[in-house]
Amino acid sequence: MERIKIQMLDPTFMAGEVKTASATLQVKPSGLSCTAELWLSKDGVSKDATSGLVAFTATGVDQSISLSVTMPVGGFEYTVLLDILTEGTLIGAYTAMETVLVPWVGEPVITW
Image 1 (cartoon, one colour):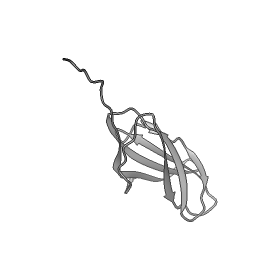
Image 2 (cartoon, helix red, strand yellow):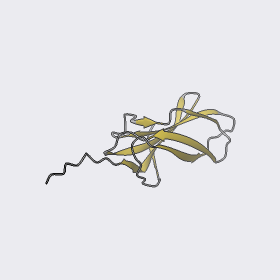
Image 3 (cartoon, helix red, strand yellow):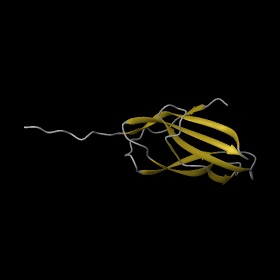
C-alpha cells in the first residue's frame, strides 16, 4: 500500500518526553474493529518510537484517536507515520510531510 502524505505541525520535543497526538480520521462502515499506530522513524522503515496498536471502533464519521508516544533519543529528525488497520489488515498508511525534531547537545568542555 502506498503511503499518503498528510499535513501536521513541525514540533520539537525532548527525548523521553511522553506526547499524545490526536489523529482525526474516518473509517467506514461504522462498527468495524480497528487499530491505529503512530510511529516515529529516522529512516522511514524502522520504528524508533511507537504508540503501539490503539484499538477503536469505527463510527463512520470523523473521530479523534489519542496516540501516546515516548520521544526517542535526541539528535535526530523523525518521520511521523500513521497506520490504520481493521482485523489486522492495513487499510490506511500515512506519512506526515513535517518531522518531529528531538534535539541533543553533548556535554560542553570548558577550559581556561
